[in-house]
Amino acid sequence: MASLWKGHKRTILINNTFHTQNAGSRQKNSSSNKSKDNDKIKDKKDNDIEITDNDRYEYMVKLYRGSIGEKDGYISETREQYFKNNLLKDAEKVKAIDNDIKYSRGLEKSDKDKYNKYKEYKETAEYKEKMKKAINQFEGDTKATAEKLYSENLKAGELILDKDGKIDNAKINKLNKVEKGIQFFTVSYQNRDKQDFKSIKKNVKDLINKSIPKEIPLYRHETIYESDERYNFEVGKTIKMDVRSFCNSENAFDSCRALQLYDNAPHKDVIFKIEGEVKSLEIESLSKFLNQKEHLVNGNFEITEIREATLTMPKIVTIRQKKGERA
Image (cartoon, rainbow, N blue to C red; front, top):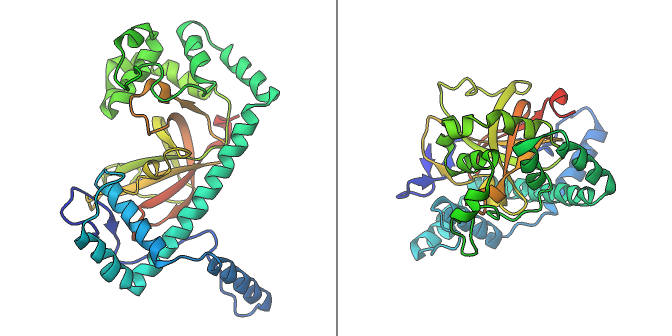
């Protein structure tokens, strides 16, 4: 594997071959005229999505800026010429880039549609009654936490940050034990194994498992090592998520799909993408990381689709929560 962005610790990985497994991939059937006609219609639909050289350039610049962790970072003349005269003059790479742009656009549209539908549902009397019943399942600190988090109306960092975006110790001191444990969890992934979080982990699982199921797109970036039992992905296989962070893509669409990857082959960088209804706990009001739109998810998920790594995207593994765990 080679790197698109040489000279930086963070890179986007390139596979030697390009794989595209779009849902709209056409199936060839020479014996069926109807199938051929359908293929022509499908091709026309794909071709209606016009992608210009400028679209490709802006797409690659966006990924490059993400790879170095600077949303509006400076693009050198050398880098600009590399994109325009090298990368975008290679027909095979242009085809791969176009496939990823189409996939990305389609994904973004479907995600926004799901969020809009969920927002509308949250305003209904039916949803509000469900939320009231969900909160009343708990007692003490857990109930107080549910009252704050289940509504999903608090701003990022609202429960822990001052007006300048810095940790407000007075606010921290007002948090109950469950809320302090969740806040501790958000500081570092290593904290999930420390006592401050482990002591309230059962409460957090209850808050997740007894929440209202919702259909919203959530994403998680992981680096999977060969020693991990999840290293070999197969459709139909069950993946266990033991209180794991996922990202709400509505306001953090690029970062939560983690297109910026570490060059750490032979390990695998993977995006887990949840489809269908899921139970989750939004915790962004207890986090100082304002762009993550973080949700906690728990339980068993079935792999329903695998999109192999491409020129600009990592492997994307679509998962669905087991039916009995989202009832």
